[in-house]
Image (cartoon, rainbow, N blue to C red; front, top):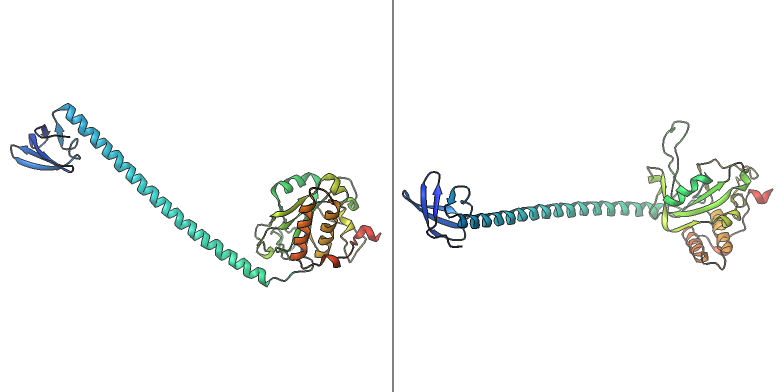
Length: 294
């Protein structure tokens, strides 16, 4: 805008007249001489235009300039925040990669234990929560030097499955049913489990229907070799059992689901389990649990 010859006032220099200005500078002639000011910053701070229309236009320019500066400052802050965020993500990625490498090294050193599967005994009312969260809790030690400490599932690794069982209140232990099971999540190492939670593999997990569960009695497969006819499974506490027993359960689930839409899921689970546990399907013996020894 053209400000030449426009009158201005200054608190110290009095009344003056604009004799020159650029996009960044304005020259005012006062009785005491010419003075230079920064344009448009000086208006509103040191200089006041007598012409109200011109003053309004300069104020508008100042306002837009301040808004632009505010936006630029905001963008700079956002850029800094984004840079810090990216830096933090890189640090976290590096930490995760190091953690994965550490786990891989440990997994390579791990030997498959012959009894690296676990069974949990639940009340029927508690199973919904397990099948919703798809994780189980190992509980805490109730007595001894480690009383109150979280139980550490030392034998578990990525070859392990968690078997979920239950029985209805008032029913004898021999009626305990298999309700479902899952492979532990990839990379899980029992001896590194600090919170006591065993997470399920995102793919290899099965929840049996009520009809399927009725046909899958736990004690058809499992037996305490020291007391083969005794059937006892404490509620909420996990027990280790052998890999062959778990493979037998999976094999029977495949047969149970024969020619049904869900057979493929069971078959894939069975094949994966046998592969990771180095079990040959053709050499798998028949189940010989406590119920079959009575």
